[in-house]
Length: 437
Ligand SMILES: *Cc1c(COP(=O)(O)O)cnc(C)c1O
Image (cartoon, rainbow, N blue to C red; front, side):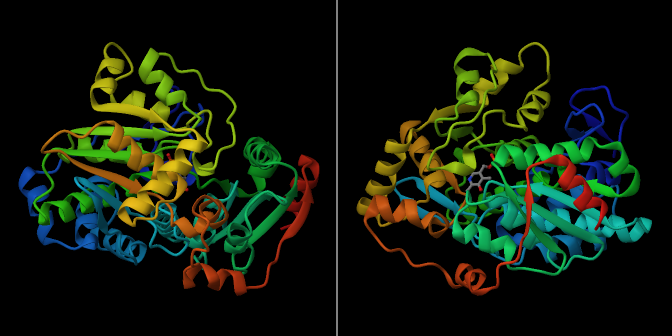
């Protein structure tokens, strides 16, 4: 199968090219030329299958034309080493807990899958070592670093703003060693991101080394996220709650929601999607007005959703056809909601006191969007709980006046020795560092 660019001005790419490059040369995002629908009988039978089996079926539909089935199954099995349980919260609302992976964030799924697929292509083609550059404001760095840890043929450089990520988050990518190097940049997240962008555009660097990125623009990172939508459906089906499903997704760059839309296009029966936002509400505004106006992000307590120009918006438009009634189709299937920090705090408080369920600030937006939708009789609501609340311990403790327990998995990172390379935010310094590695 070939992959085209959403900007339509780049040559078609093979799966391998799309994964190794990340972004197309016209700066568009890669999309598969076809989305293979699954038979209804296959979807209905998923309630009798394990998460790994379900994921293998979905992966086969995306990548089966280009990869040997056994290799693909191995990659899927090696990716999904943890559960994603559906947990009942109240009345008709369920939480899809995506935070049981190594760094307690949903990004673990995509990061692990991409690392394994990329490594396979590197070995198959005998490519030189690939260097992954990733700028992080917190969560992405940990998931990517852990997903790629120990994976042959790849070295990861995590650029993070000095003093601006939480202690727990910093530990998740500075204590690993091996093929992971943390670069502590004396600047802001935007400085880190512009260093990465400059490196990708620097001809001299790219002549001498292979550079790629690992954020949700990469198809190998965002497509595997559709696995857990099918698995959630199977879990609800077992409970007799899979009819008239409304799915709410806390959104930042919209990779997670887009993966859900791919699942829908493959035949997953979903009645409606909701994109839950914080104060960064460009998508909400698009649904209200039909106009898309990206702008700089503003900081909130749900900071992984602080995105002012969601990169996967181009994919959503493309999925519904760029012309004509795309806007109408999108509005019919997806609604939006928006919560400010005070509302998020109050959602966390009341959900904990009334139902004993502890939400993180991102999941809180997802949960409340279902309450406010509002769900009708017969509908089941499912929100994606994208991170473990302990990852946002300071915020959650302040809101609940609590001292929540940090899971062992997180504590383990905090015991490691922090190692980082300190650099200033100047591109010349960064470039000479890269030339020296
Ligand atoms: C990355 C992230 C999001 C946003 O996901 P997108 O795919 O970028 O929309 C939401 N919540 C948490 C906890 C995250 O880490």
